[in-house]
Length: 309
Length: 327
Ligand SMILES: Nc1ncnc2c1ncn2[C@@H]1O[C@H](COP(=O)(O)OP(=O)(O)OP(=O)(O)O)[C@@H](O)[C@H]1O
Ligand SMILES: [Mg+2]
Image (cartoon, rainbow over all chains, first blue to last red; front, side):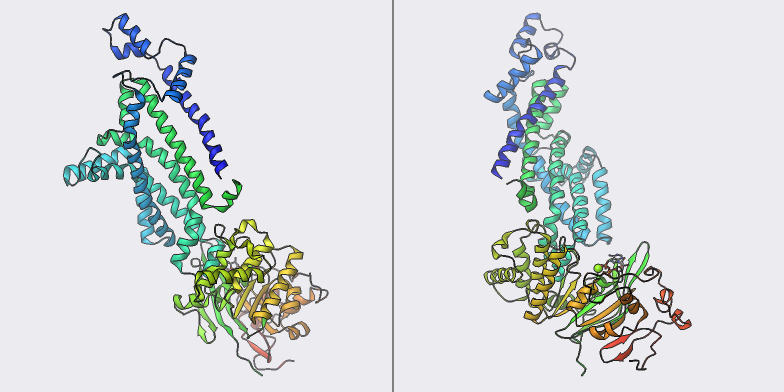
């Protein structure tokens, strides 16, 4: 198992290199001269030259990429922001916990709604509860994130005045963003849990458990849920990536100072090093989360565990 | 001598309600299982053998299945109407079942030992350590070293899985063991071993057994009584030798005629001319009449009642009018 984890960690290197290469290349070929764009039309030739020197823009594509990787690996240096000349790494790293917290809360909301509702829906298939929750799940996946966020601000902040509409420091401030970002994931998890549970409760080993005289509630928790968990966990892992992406919109709506908003601002201002740094952080997080999910599989299923020996 | 049956099914009807129509899986079925005896339940595929077994433990999957009417009397108590909590005390404890397919009958993410221990913990008032010990003993009883307690089903072969299933079903020393084709999923050499094992255990634990099978060879070897099933009904029910020597129902006669030698152990049932009726659209009257060489007018309209031919032999056929001894 340890060997497996080590191998998977090594595999992260090409993945992250690949992501970096793709974003780097795309930003490199984006038309426009960053120096001119940042400093404006009035800037003199000397100023422009100085800017290019600081940000290493005079080198060729390959040299720049190699330097970027070298600095990132050995000095945790992702370059300087074009706008404020602050180190990108520190800038992104300081905002990153906020984004992680937002996505994490979203997943938490989604799991704590999705899994119980999915289980009840499956055990009471075709009941009123099942129909109603499936309708809500359908609404949940179809409703755009930002729109739902705005509706909730209108209703809970503007109309009812129960919850603040921006910020991310107090518990009250976290409720609306967490609900906004978690809703569609909750819907996806609900549907996955339901279908996975329905599949599992039809299995022969569930009947075996009943034939032993086991209680229905224990059959669900002890026999069915564990077997139903693998596809659910897969979806949670993928959704986490989606939530990191979704954070971009949610942070903008609620004025949360996270990586998402930083990136949106950076894109608007063509501050490429910041965009690149943000993408890198999110890619690394996503990879690590999915590694964690793969390890979780082994924990959940002895058949997978025995393959890793 | 008339013994009282340990378990008795009376006029049972079970339907599966599907989109394609109502499958009349069990139709007016009667069955008696006597203490300490092995009853063979024989019938073609789709005759309703598994459904009968599930109904005996009220485990027919619902939906789509439903016990429409009838009684399953265990020591005089009707399991069909019993409270779920009371029924759970009987399941796995007094009546237990070996399912048709050992490959899928075990939970893949639980150790085999824990799966055996689960039943013991449920029904016997013992602590965890004692239950673990008993589960290990059960493994040894079915011929698996107890060191393998902590292994998972995928680490076992098919035959060993079936042994684990047998260990689970015998772990609480049940009075009745229902074995639903316990050997069909296994290859021939393992089949004989498993059957022998079940025989030994049955004697050792003094269990009554319902042995469901396609295989008349198995019946000849292990059963005391035989019930022949056709389209959801037991059409003939007799002590084994009586049935083999003097089969009465035309379907039973057909079954035996299609086998060159009754003691030929590998021979399977050979179907008689015609096909089993569609269970969503059963013939009127006696369900066998379209295939019966002796069909009479009454067979097309009236379902025959049980006719006792002798003490341990009854049949449902209009050839043998009720109350008339034909021996
Ligand atoms: N879950 C179900 N839904 C719908 N119909 C079913 C279901 N289970 C069984 N049936 C139908 O009920 C009838 C009896 O099935 P059953 O499984 O009891 O037969 P069987 O005698 O055990 O057959 P086999 O020898 O193949 O195991 C069949 O027509 C079958 O198609
Ligand atoms: Mg069957």
